[in-house]
Length: 181
Image 1 (cartoon, rainbow, N blue to C red):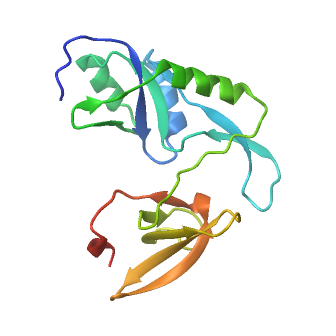
Image 2: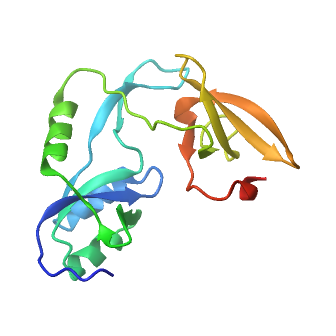
């Protein structure tokens, strides 16, 4: 763990297990730790519904305000569903107060909020919803303004392309492309 010489309270992004944002949020609040889980209204993707639902703005992430003293740092990471703070080899990287305040203002607006990840050609991805759930592949391209993307799945030295909803894929850590074959 990185040795911190001066303890300063700041916001940090905390990665959570998939679909555990609410659980981690509630448990951290129960530990009297300041937390911010931005949520936005979106139209339900289920075909049998046409209602608006609130979902986390950044799937798998929330913000925690802490000075990262060792006891509190450990207490946060011991929370069921918490994975790790976002940072680099030197430790967690703070998120500016201005960014968090901007997000707080944004979610109080009645305007639709669009989020996403901008994929680059060659990015390793995994399909997380739909008929191809669990398939790992490589992002190829966006398909116009349709909200759909093309993903290549490699096997036996060949590839197959699949068209999926952009929201149905998530990035994987960048690794050697040989591993996906």
